[in-house]
Image 1: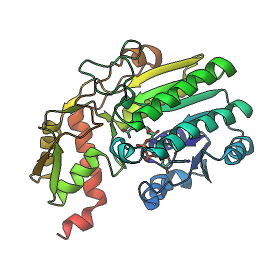
Image 2 (image 1 turned 135 degrees about the horizontal axis):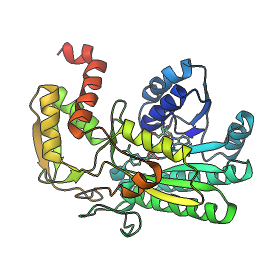
Image 3 (image 1 turned 90 degrees about the vertical axis):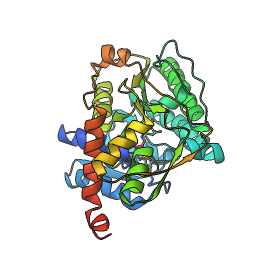
Image 4 (image 1 turned 30 degrees about the horizontal axis):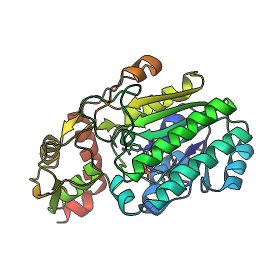
Length: 319
Ligand SMILES: NC(=O)c1ccc[n+]([C@@H]2O[C@H](COP(=O)([O-])OP(=O)(O)OC[C@H]3O[C@@H](n4cnc5c(N)ncnc54)[C@H](O)[C@@H]3O)[C@@H](O)[C@H]2O)c1
């Protein structure tokens, strides 16, 4: 079962599992954080395969989880359902506790009570806060800068406790800014692309030298699938990044080149909650999962913008 399977990362994972011929239950409540229509379209192709069962349900609803697990004989769960968004979490933290923490607790209880022994949990680089050095799972402390990051620390702690007390095998994967086709509309690469292509002003927070370890979605899916397949016992936490951060200015230049239009930048002060830099040390995921990201930033940005321009050909073409 993939919770949040209609979302950006979830829909790519479901596609990959379907390609492998697996039967998948998608549990998603089509949370209105961004339009339901986008999420429905994300999973359209997978649903047509006949291998996917869509359960419209909420991870906070114990009965919905019980039914989804027992009716379909679920044995492994990838838990991606969450309220994302660092900045929004500073303004309105409550849903982050409710969905990301209580929802994760509910999911872990359902797994324990209904015979699921293997769980993969979507955590985030946001647990670290900002780091000037590559973040390492063992030695870099978790000092989140936002309620979103804090909610992922809490989710990890719950995973650790259920692995210890109930014998679940749980891998928490700390994703580092994932991008690619179908990326969430609130994320930087999709917002910048939309604004540059539409000739709108692009707000740039800070002086453009902040950097992010952008990770192409197919690389992240390789890591998630390896975490499902690899028999790791107990609780593990692993970074899934690329390990090569991109400076914001360079990212904007890449996007301008691919879109064929200059960005009109508007510089604004740095935002609270936004780390200046994120970078993953991926040696543990390499060693334990054989994880090896292969999509370079320039190629990933090209793949993303090609997808975006194709999807919006009529709208952009008619300007
Ligand atoms: N995209 C990234 O760069 C990134 C980075 C770090 C961590 N993550 C984590 O990865 C996971 C997937 O992120 P995404 O970018 O694909 O986000 P997304 O919003 O596209 O996907 C999340 C999905 O979960 C569903 N959902 C939300 N609340 C739910 C609930 N209460 N019950 C059932 N379903 C619910 C949503 O409808 C959505 O389809 C999240 O846990 C996110 O925190 C993402």
